[in-house]
Amino acid sequence: MKIYKLLSLLFITILTLSSCSNNDDDDIQDTTPGNLQVKFENGFGNLGDIVLDQTTQTSANGQKHQFSTLKYIVSNIALIDENGTEFKYNYNNPDKGAFIISQSEAKGGIVYINLTEIPKGNYRKIKLGLGISPTAYLIGQDGQGLFWEKAKQQGMAWSWAAGYIFTKLEGKYGTSAPDTEFMNHCGNMGDTTANGTPDLYREVVLDLPTMARVSKDITPSVHILADFNQYLSGKKALTLDANNNMAMGSSQHLVDVSSNLINMFRVDHVHND
Image 1 (spheres, rainbow, N blue to C red):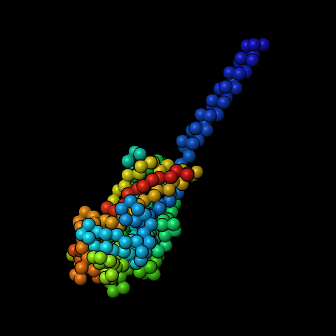
Image 2: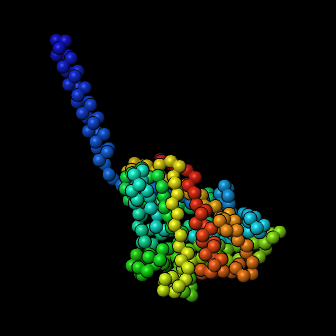
């Protein structure tokens, strides 16, 4: 009788272990894609939530400035997993993979974008582009017709030339107080190679402090801080004056602005909820 009970207990144990093993295998083999949210918080230094027409910053060269308009385009987002494999999210397809980040649309200081159909995985880096790449622009109407209309509606396309405005910064600046208007609109016009003009599109790769664990059950949220102190006080300290305060296109001043701004991004934290 004791032997019978022992054999029964052993049989139940084997069935339980087998069931657990099968469940583990199912979890490993389940490759259902998930979603990922990216949150952009625009600020100065380590302080987020710029208030348009109100928040004032003093540059490295002693100029006070504030924004009345703050918009930029983010595209060519890619996620890099723990094995170094890169997943490109609708790369060079603005209709599905480009987003306009506008401070006027921030909710609680945050602008949200939602990425769908992300392969299941543990991601440790995020890559993004500031602006629209020349490759994407040159595909013509296919893949960017919808985004082109959106960009025009939001004032992120040139009215006198073909191309996108990558970054639109408007506001006031001054020495003792911000009292002189400025408009700096950075972007490419037409085919930069054919035109022999600078390419203002920039890309950056950011480390995630915590892995973003994408699955069908988990939608990570990646919180990115954009430090607009980099605008005038970045890699190259810039001064606004009568020669550049109404700059639009791809002048040397705007090349410097673009090179400064691509360094403004950093990932503050990741939520795996």
